[in-house]
Amino acid sequence: MTLTFKHGILATTITASLALTACQKPAEKPAEEPKAEQKGESTEAKPADKAEATTAKAEKGKEAEALVKSFSDMAYAGYSDSLEGAKKLQAAIDKFVAEPTEANLNATKEAYKEARVPYSQTEVFRFDEGFVTKNDKRAIESVDAWEGQVNAWPLDEALIDYVDGSHYEGEYKAKSNIINGDTIKVGSESKDTTDLTPELLASMNEYGGSEANVTTGYHAIEFLLWGQDLNGVGAGAGKRPVTDYSTEEGKCTNGAAVADSTKTCTRRGQYLQAAAKLLIKDLEEMVAQWKPDSENTLRADLLARANDNAVRQIMYEMGSLSLGELASERMQVALVVGSTEDTHECFSDQTHTSYAMNAQGIKNVFEGNYKGKGGYGIKQYLVDMGKQKEADDLQAKFDATTGAFDTIVAETEKNDIHVDQMVGTVAQAEKVGVKKEEQEKRRSWVADAITGLQEQTKSLEVAAASVGIDKLDSDGGTAFSEGK
Image (cartoon, rainbow, N blue to C red; front, side):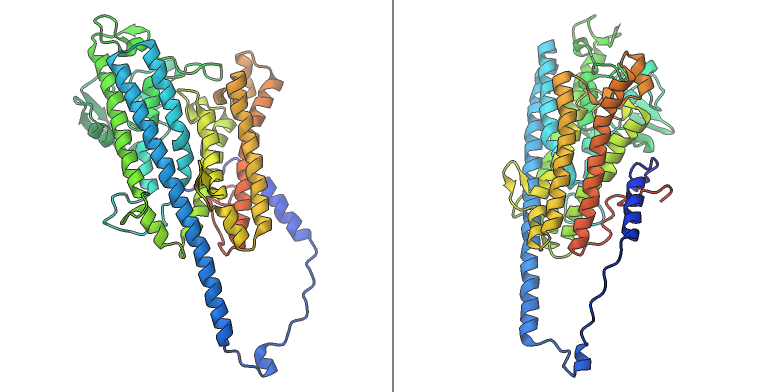
């Protein structure tokens, strides 16, 4: 994506920074030494100098190789954990569909929450578009090209199942949806939806050319488990009744309304199972892409580019998730307009987890550690390149960001104040009985995390420049002024 910062939160900071730099007195230049040719010396490099340069280049190459290997090992471990989480989720779904009880529904929701923890940390590996070498033998073009079927968001839930029109902000207005009908029409396109298979769901993702027509992945499963969150900036997540999955005659429901037949509930269970099956298939394919000693994979490609653009790619991916995706798309948009629909897990109210784990995933790459896997990160790379100051500055910025997200998580889990309540405007909050001072405090928690992400990205770009990577352009980089 191309990032355009419309709200200018960071523009003032950058402008002030530039002004300070312009006001500083430039250091006096030392007297220049006479050039070699002016001294009558030969400019040809001596054998000893050539050998030293070759050795230095080789050592630098070893550090880059250590970095990309560690990065690849963390990707493999993260996607492997995500796959295991998806398998546990699938098992819970199968048990729930076979026996739709309140206890089984709650167990499935818990499995979903657990599955999101490792996957949210893998999103730092996503932004590889434009770096990966073309290879027709590789099964997956790039992580970015693959990710849309797994984690696309936001989704237009009305295409999948019933919605409460008074709380629906999407574009799909037809009464028929994938679950209640055998045919779906979007614009001039029509699709037979009789058999709810993984293949059908995959073929309908972004159906009709709309990015919001998401039919697969984590968030489709989330919606089918929780349903819409009808609380706005008030407390509470979605409350899909367990009877939405009842196959007993006369007990199948569409929310508060009794369905015409059990067919609707049966299809809802089939959709849920098909989505879980497709999720596992997708994750299995990505795990294979990062398997050690593999050929024609994303891992093999990255290792081959260790001394080409691989280090730039790693730092770019960190910056892109930090700034363009998390700080902007997922957080700033929701905060500026007070949109609960733009919080990342808006059905389940688990946004605090995905936010914090996204941030942790970036930090994992910096520190070179995901649950004991990796061993060599950007921090050590900077130190080995003689950039201790830049490494220390980045560590401080990452720690500050972690602290900001810790506050969001703590307020959610200890005080039951969720992100959709935090991002509400003062006017919205006052309508549900929250005073202005309290809401301003809540909003500041999210604003502080955004600022932390912005500041750590600025430091990341400085660190990148210090090792010869100019214009990192972290999904928009430092081009925050209006219209750029």
